Image (cartoon, rainbow, N blue to C red):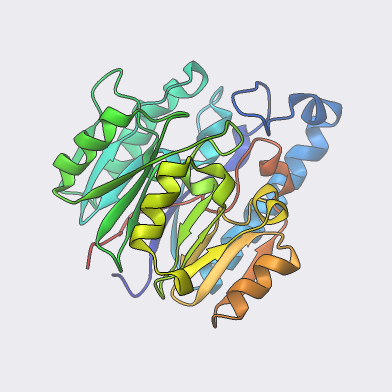
Length: 281
């Protein structure tokens, strides 16, 4: 993997919370003070960018599109591995206008030998529902809320890599990245109630007991499982003591950032990033 991770982020100039497509979204709270929330969103974005750069990341900042406020969550843009990318197909009409701008941005980056897109109607929402685990050499994939089960087979065939399909049990944890985070040391931080019993059995079969870090309900609601891991650094929304202790106890450094304006839309640190140089080895 690159010594300096290349991470795409989207400028929040067009960000707002104006509709509801997940249980966390609060358009009423946003509407009470849109100018204030936009100012806070800019400060939060700048703080996240500073934390990512401090961890060694090379950021590619791209412009959003008017009328597509959730473009600030580019984890959903595509799945990327080994210089190839496949662009998402969004289940919600509100986000479908992001697909072609994301595709154009990835093509313009010059980093990919191929930029494909999921077939129309084959809903799969990017790296938010397909997380590469370098230690285990497998994609962990979420389905059942936004992404479809059949999209996982398409993903595995495109990359020629195995994929473990995990069914998500609740609308609150609508993407895998909200409740599941593989770490560089082989541990997995996850929130068990977000998964069906069958999905938990699959996690337990692949992840040894001493590598399972179980987040609390407070950790998950704070969007701290939705974290960016770079080496031994973990960057997340403001961290409760429990999750901070889980990670520092394993030798990770935790940097937390006030991402409250983005949590009003149901997204945290991982949602706000897409690693462009993700490599299988």
